[in-house]
Length: 256
Ligand SMILES: Nc1ncnc2c1ncn2[C@@H]1O[C@H](COP(=O)(O)OP(=O)(O)OP(=O)(O)O)[C@@H](O)[C@H]1O
Ligand SMILES: [Mg+2]
Image 1 (tube, helix red, strand yellow):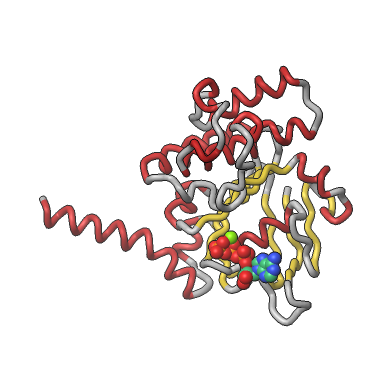
Image 2 (cartoon, protein in one colour):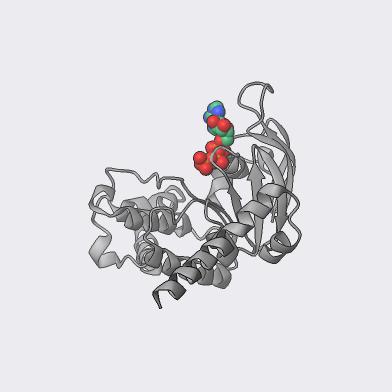
């Protein structure tokens, strides 16, 4: 569904690369988690898929078509995007934020309102309670849900999500992760989700892609990454959830 072929991105005419020679293919209906430290090129990789950035070199195909051959607006109709740090229109109500893409596409008022209700309910923000609020009247986690609802509104086949659950408390976060995964599988959505959290990546994704300093180090299932890490950084990342679980376990024993 999404194919990156030797993609590179430099912001300084080739002096350095935010994304170095990256090839990656994401199947229809797959959820791929993109993980790596700050500045490793995750957001840049995501933005090249819907042409918020154009690659310096290489080729990107979505549904078999070169993205550079497509009008960016047209391309984005079919690709929902959840921005890092939410990125809602601050002076527009939840309803108008969610309606943004369907409005651009010229849907009828009735269809838009019905769809807004549907996606707000889907992400756990009952429409009648939240539709008329503006983003500053919502908690950070609620704003993130609006971001997800907005990205889903126009029924895209592809969803790009940049740390969509970052601002949520752990219990809400776990709930929404499960809920989102269910929705994603039900709709057969193809998703690339950036995260800092290996536990989230392992629990939600079909495969995990690990980036470091613009390089794609490894792509695989959680068990492939655990059992055959291709780089010391992958080993380190994979040990994190286990170490935390062990530490918690030890603490509980001391208490008990
Ligand atoms: N528009 C830009 N102009 C110049 N440099 C940029 C631009 N966008 C990103 N970069 C640089 O490219 C590199 C990768 O940035 P990117 O935003 O992709 O990182 P990231 O992995 O998403 O990090 P984080 O986890 O902090 O969001 C960084 O060194 C960043 O400073
Ligand atoms: Mg980023």
